[in-house]
Image 1 (cartoon, rainbow, N blue to C red):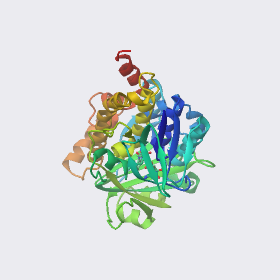
Image 2: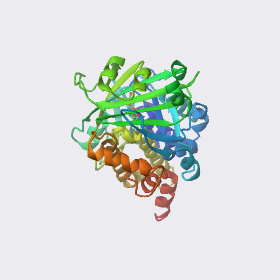
Image 3: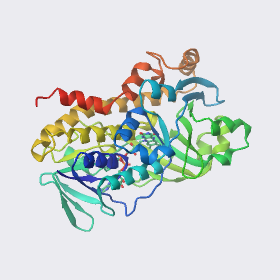
Length: 421
Ligand SMILES: Cc1cc2nc3c(=O)[nH]c(=O)nc-3n(C[C@H](O)[C@H](O)[C@H](O)COP(=O)(O)OP(=O)(O)OC[C@H]3O[C@@H](n4cnc5c(N)ncnc54)[C@H](O)[C@@H]3O)c2cc1C
């Protein structure tokens, strides 16, 4: 089939690779005039690294990946360690695929190069301004029309395709929180004894505090090791114009928002980028009734970042959609209704469940100081590591098996195996 992918983000590039490898002809329309490599670090958990490896993207990115040993959760005020949850060991032994930290630019560049090498065609500076799902055509800025058997919309949080699928506006909904992102060469923090461990041991450091969290982890970087920080807190500004969710921030703003936190944090501030955090209402359908337009990634399920799963779930969507459309029973225009119904059946409940768990994680990690927080901390101190029924979902074996143990290819095999030939 001829397939148009709208948007060359992490989900769009992954689905383009999966579809081109399935034998389809893929054209990607991207609004940006050039692909710029901005952004900070990203966590790639086993459920998504498994897919990147299967698609052969690992060869493009592996040298930029760091494997954190564990997730260390600490008290906001003094850095007291509350719980340590292993990451590397279960990724290797239980989930059979690594947990990576990588700079988004390196992941994006690797996906882009893989998409080019596998034969996808790109049109940059091609913002899609309207979609006619019944005829399978899109109109881009500059009045160029493209037609295809299927349009896969991975146009992100502010998706215009979402509105076409829903038949009504489906705008982003503010979460009331924002994130400041800071990435620095790790060497800039060298020589400060209290930070030595943070810049040398690859782990996920997570400070839990009232109305906010701080996360730090190491990245391999292109030329030198980097340290990445994500400061999440309640929104302290609402002055961004509609549709704009990012702008540069300052160290002073972060300092003001995190007054009184672990004194080590003060030392870590540098170049700051801030994003307002949005989700949108969960959708009950991801495809248009014509079955020629389908959503994936943040366009379908923009979620809060508290579990670091937004891109991972988009990568899972890509594997499932690509896998269904590689099955001879589903790979032609006539079988698109059945193919997209199966895609929705396999994906919507999974994405909604992870999105809900991410919100639960927000409240668990951002408690006000008081009896509930003390009870939580006492429990965490008594229950290190991973166990069934742990009150911290990041330590709950049952949840981790469901989240990181998700094998998109096995899910596909089972679903396709159940169907009559
Ligand atoms: C602070 C923060 C931390 C996060 N950390 C993690 C993490 O550690 N792990 C994780 O898995 N996820 C994480 N996420 C979530 C993750 O960043 C997103 O889920 C992911 O980037 C979404 O990818 P996407 O391809 O769906 O959308 P996007 O990356 O938004 O890509 C959309 C693309 O479509 C293009 N586009 C938009 N409109 C049009 C149009 N009309 N025509 C043509 N092109 C268009 C855009 O230019 C863009 O290139 C985090 C998010 C935040 C905010």
